[in-house]
Amino acid sequence: MSVGSFCLVLHGHLPYVLRHGTWPHGEDWLYEAAAETYLPLLSAIQECDFLNGNPKLTIGLTPVLLEQFIHDDFERGFERYLIERHERAVSDRREFENTNNLHFAHLAARWEDFYENLAKRFSEIGGNIPAAFAALARRGFVEILTSSATHAYLPLLYEDSSVFAQFRGGVATSARILGFKPEGVWLPECAYRPPGPWYAPIPWGYTRNRMGSEQFLEREGLSYFFVENQLIEHCRSEWVDNAGWQKVDWEEAVKYPNRGWRSVQEPVRVTSDGSMPGRVTAFARDPEICEQVWSGDIGYPADGVYLEFHKKFGERRGLRYWKITGSKLDLGAKEPYYPDDVPGKIYEHVSHFCGRVKQRLHDYHNQTGRYGVVVASFDAELFGHWWFEGPQFLRDVLLSLNADPDVDLCTPSEYLENHPPDKAVALPEGSWGDGGDHRVWVNDRVNWMWDVEYRCETHFGKLTYNLPWRNRPELRDILEKAARELLLLQASDWPFVIARNQAVDYGIKRFVQHVGRFECLTDVAEKIASAPDGLDRLTDLEKFEIRDAELHDVVFADIDLNWWNM
Image 1 (cartoon, rainbow, N blue to C red):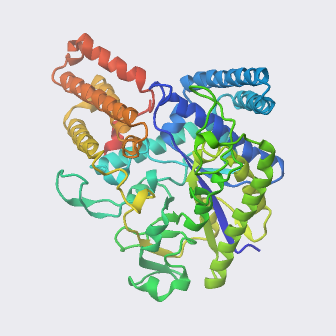
Image 2 (cartoon, one colour):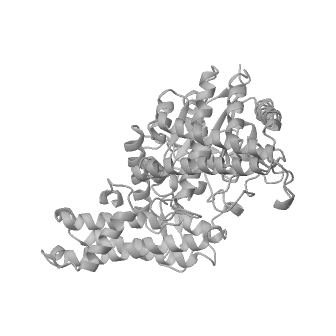
Image 3 (cartoon, rainbow, N blue to C red):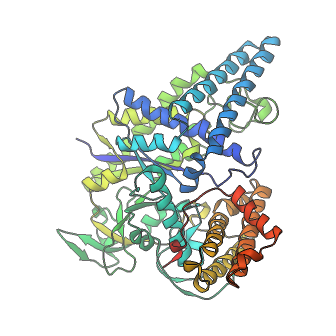
């Protein structure tokens, strides 16, 4: 009989890059992720099934990622990418053979097989990655999470209507593409905001009461979300279920720690103001377990036998032939990669990881007598893209824990069905970013973006309130295009890459492009609204601006201005 459960949760997301550059920043991000993470994850789950395992993987596929994966441009571009990668491997092999570098020639031949098999796999699923994940979800192997439409950093958006639009657009997109509405949601950057007085991160507007994150989720019919451990560890006790919910004081968590208060091993209901237990549940990420993978110092991916990510052969899109060797070594000191060394190391790390999961659950059960859960959540691209052998590790973790009678491998929905939370708490504000707060997305490098974003939000709110778009189809069409640009400029990715000094120029360019298109489209909307024949008065340049937005930004075709209604 199991003493606890294990939930493996991956967060799959990429910003909107389709039709916005290729290399080094742009569509290549999408192709690399599909080739190195998402197709290998699909294969790992199917291998578990083939080996009579019962895999349980929870994965967030953000709406903007789903939109890109189902677009014809992605399918065609990805097929070309795989052909180019295969040709690069063939060229490398011949070059290595000519210089009698037989080990590297062997590695190049492995890359040939890798990309050839990916092309075959992509063809077998009809070029539709979301549909393949949805099929696994229907079989009970995978649970898919939704998210906000474009991965906006929700606690810092100015208008509650913008937060509603992000969630409504996200849920509608997930349901349309997957064929069902997900029950759970991944809050972008695990960023949570409690209800109450809110202050903009820059001098802007005035202090006012805002809704909490869980209130938006409850309104949209979502059941659970994930937070970083410090939010649970510093929560406030509000309610407890003793054959019926009862109000408790704020010291309950201190007086009765064995009840599971403030433990990452138990999910909790989240209450906005303490007046009722709430209907939405928060799961906490287990930091001790996640550190085994995530840590740059002790994490498994830093082991010397694994494939080195940064060193590549040749220019532009080069392939990798070296192992990490040592995490502190210069790239010039890296040694050749030996694939035969990998299985033993995977076995070692899987055994260690599963042993730590079991120990955490046993310790919690022994201390409290309660049934707990370990939630291990990671960025999906860590597995396969950054850590090439990561999908093999996940496959073997799922197989090992599935066969272990001490651990119940499950999805969050399954856990909640069998072990409903018996506590309700009020959470503090926070994220899984540096410092557990908003500093990655609010700082001197990016604060100018919030000033621009707030201007766009408030201007759009005025237009949708004042302009007669409900009975003017041509006006509604232009405002829907502007709304698409508003969603895209709100992506948390643009301030992130700038603050982290990664792809700074690309992040600035993309943000400014969407702002520029938004402003052009709102100008056109006001011109159309000014007269019954406003559409006929558009200049050739204004028509070009509309067409430019249509050509570049091909997501959320079913956008609905009612998403912004409170």
